[in-house]
Image (tube, rainbow, N blue to C red):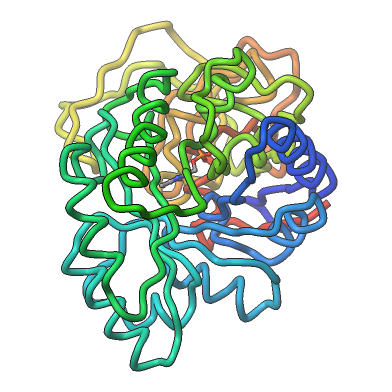
Length: 355
Ligand SMILES: *Cc1c(COP(=O)(O)O)cnc(C)c1O
């Protein structure tokens, strides 16, 4: 079979989706299944659907278009604040988008009127992670303007943490969203339905009972796909972590010195490599490289293997300490985490195999 390949267990992903959905529903929270981690490929989106997911979120329009065209039913959310230059397509392909700029929301409204549609808007609030969102003190004025716009249905507020600033979710920063909702109701008489207050890392708050009452939507990718919460540095209890594995093929095995011979310049990526002299070692080269995956993030299933590094198309392993026999043609397996998944899914050189 083709190598390198990413083997994807659809049944396990479906079970994870169903587990996360039930966990959230118990606390009155609906799940938007985030599909960007797998480019919204149909078989995995279908596993989400079969696990009970009925709302789908992606950061890229090409992926959302793929979902719509492959017939996955349910609301489509654009979860990256839209580019001005994609406003017409946002209205065409999605039902809802997360937003933070009045100018863009206005353009979405005008476009929605042209297309004879109504576009749903969730206003993102920056609760401290310093990625997207209006500052809390600007929320009331912003919502006032949005609620008068034609073509726009204001659906609620959203927040995101753990992505740029590394800020962890807390009772306080989720409470902020709920307080703002109350303020909007009081000052503007506006009521709305969605408080989209988190992603995978927010599941920890649910389990500890520390999520502010009133939050009613999470946008979840990683917990469903990998059963992990890498920001919170933990696994999701009851979920499968072995939903995917990478298989790559050995193309060379030789005993070589552990320090290069000759004058050392910069490598192909502008770094000066450093080597520890361990004498002669047995090295295996795999046909897989930085064009496919950040090689230093790979985790071999054979724990006795050491990753020495990689270039664009080659991965170099030290297999001296392994009890396994390595030879050209041998397949080597790797565990998958969030950063390797993102890259492997995106690389067209990596075959996706559904098992
Ligand atoms: C990627 C993303 C998510 C999903 O995050 P996970 O950690 O994979 O659950 C949610 N919301 C936004 C805005 C995102 O960009």
